[in-house]
Length: 107
Length: 122
Image 1: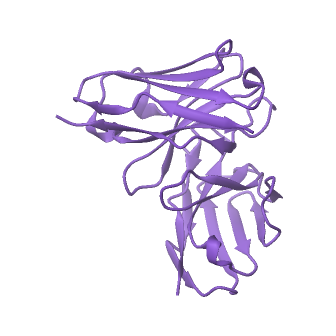
Image 2: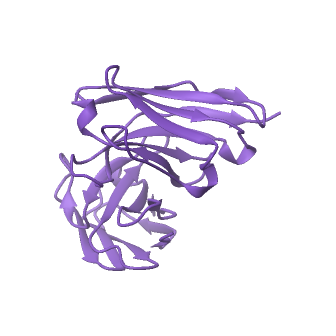
């Protein structure tokens, strides 16, 4: 099973600041990594798939990069609605696995 | 508009059974693989099971193999998860999720339902 480790666990930032979230895989997942955003009481929302492709309707301030074992989700300038929990997920191998999440909170 | 509506959750005793359903609309259901993903209270996401568009291929996480069965009825646009021998650790909100691509083996999720809560407790 591929283990995804997200860091940091919590990120405290102010609106307008840049957020950089990390996801590290225990073995190579090529570019088969997705990122999701989840707000309290809501289902997850797909942000990025295959490492760097923004999903339909996702603002350009969200970007993904990386390949192999190291991936990054960046939010260029945080909007109030961006404070949430973010998860990465690999689709390279079964079983599919998610990272433990990074909570982006208001400083 | 894509919609996924889960149902069938509830309170069940350890060792009991439950069948979850997910009614899909707004897309050509048979063309897409579907998955079940769960989230224990206050915890992260855990993929549980997936089924191909035709229903001919299924995958499970080890902890549910032999206890859970995923299936689909493409004539009814409905996904199912039959759960048996339920344990306390199966307590979670269960989401159904649609594959983001018709590509075989592609499994990221572009649409999610709102989830149905399964509580396993005596």
